[in-house]
Length: 262
Image 1: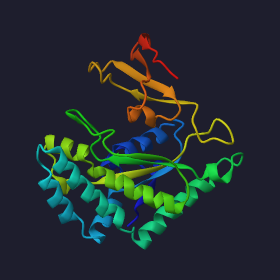
Image 2: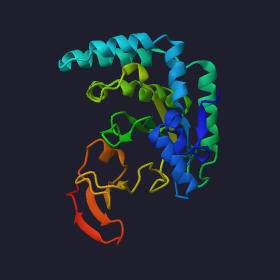
Image 3: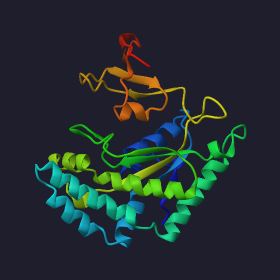
């Protein structure tokens, strides 16, 4: 079984194994958008890790015990589950497949940048149910930026898997009636965006575009959030971004809000 799949081989039909983020990156790559290259570590890799370490029943038991309104109980169970992931080693064949895909990805880097910066990737969680009509799981799991080197990559992959089991994510799935035994996670490994200088791996600016306005539910509006630096600051709620609302049909700017910046 192959656990790593490049964006060029993914589309919407692959959401069950590549997650929403991974499948959509495949769609955007096929459509010709300037998507930084990368690959997806499929949900089957997560399942293989869980099976290899006999974690499934332990996870389910802890998750069900945490199905209460007691925040302390929920957090304690979540920490125990995440520790199970971080204590385990990724099986050798799977680790080799991940690091080989990483080597192929980073060896195709820009020769004008240092080797360290060419090796930098983003390791991003890709849930199999990120954006549904009645629920949004986007932002529930973690992303890790500027990951360099094989050991750091493997550790970040485990951290992504473990982030499926934060108290917040578990509580949200409970409210949505999702069986903890059915949960799995894909991981996106993607070249970090181009640096502003040879000595920095910091993006000048970045943002998030919503093809329907999540603020008012209007599907004929586009919402753009943007800020200085990497987009994770927006996703993580660390900054208040600039916001622009655009009419899909006329492309007219309907509103613009500029946030205060340091």
